[in-house]
Length: 304
Image (tube, rainbow, N blue to C red; front, top):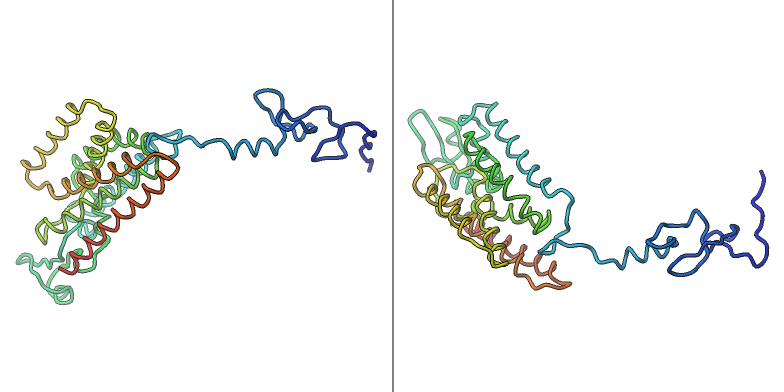
């Protein structure tokens, strides 16, 4: 095997490969670099070390309220829509409104025993002898505070909710970034569930993503207010939705108002957190505190 010729004395060599003759120098540090070490720069070439140092010192781009910008701001909303659609399809394939999935996923503050004579408040063990047990949050079905926000039965219900998510979601993700947007969505959903636990009839089942959607409406209000925008059109849209909430039967006003309040709290925290290098830390601490408050409210409902 032949060896590469040794450079003559006095001839510049690559600082990373001393056996290679190099007549090109890094534009930043002026060290000789061979073709394998050349990295294209705006002017000439740079060495790998200078490129790495430049990448470390370059300030990362951020969204308006501190998140990491993404090329596709629709991905999270599409993912949430897919989950909702998948759960709805599973419910439809297993019996629709009579599906056992509805009993398990919908939020019911207290469990209920259903027999041919109606519903009765008895223990699960006794119910299994005479009827069907519909689990509730107080009886241990804690997952319902989250799963109820992804379960729908009526086509119009999921259709309107997912349309609103498709319209509002990408706008808010561009402002907040993916992680903050997802936190806004989920905490709004949980806030709606907390109000349902405390204010809805004990044995009434509640389901749907409306609490989270109302949280997105509230977040948009905060963002528009922050920049001094015109709230009249958005306010009119929210007013129409609230009118429907309180006039149409079988709509959970508790979930809607709880989600709206949760969205206001989360969005205000994200939008008005002090700017600067610690903004993300302030936002994280605030989100954790909101989560703790919601968990405490759930724990108190269990103990009530």
